[in-house]
Amino acid sequence: MKVTPRRAREIARTRQDILEAAARAFVHSGLKAATMQDIAKEAGYTAASLYGYFSSKEEILKGLHQLIAEEVTGVFDTPIPGGLTFRQKLELLLQRQLEVAMRRRDLIALFHVSGPFADGRCPGDEMSTFERRVELFANFIRQHAAPAELHGRDPRDAALSIAGVTFIFYLDMMKTGETTRFEDRLPRVLDLVLYGVLGAPA
Image (cartoon, rainbow, N blue to C red; front, side):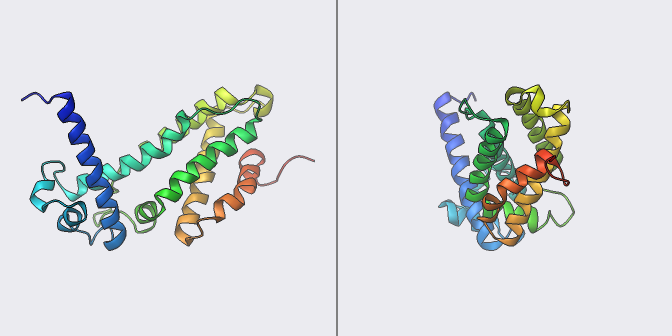
């Protein structure tokens, strides 16, 4: 049976509501302990009705992982004001990513600090997500950095540095619970990304 556009929108909204409810259930009970019944109760559905939208708890976890990844990468689509240096543009981009991380910090902490599933698998394809961020950073650099600012460096190499360093600092923030720490440290993070461990040339 063909799904009408209106019905498709209704399904998408319901799935979104279930994912948001699942996020609350996972934060409350933990990734492994939370059950489909817990998620259904949080969402205001019966457990049986959830299976009309998600086949399993694992599929819900994957959906949440994809949702967070889309929110993080979505900041690259937000326009950057003109008249800024590359450093200022990069700082603005990272601040926007931080806002997403702050909004989802409890769930992100569970994904990255609590560990993967018991059999060693993660709820999403971490490598594909990272590669996507690297690609977006590389495109951002090509669009916003003048050749002189890169000093001959390849945009993808620079993107790997930015994606790697910022991820580690984000993860440290999530693990320690110091949610304002990254914003306070952002100037030093930018120095590390742009100038390396030896600092800016004299």
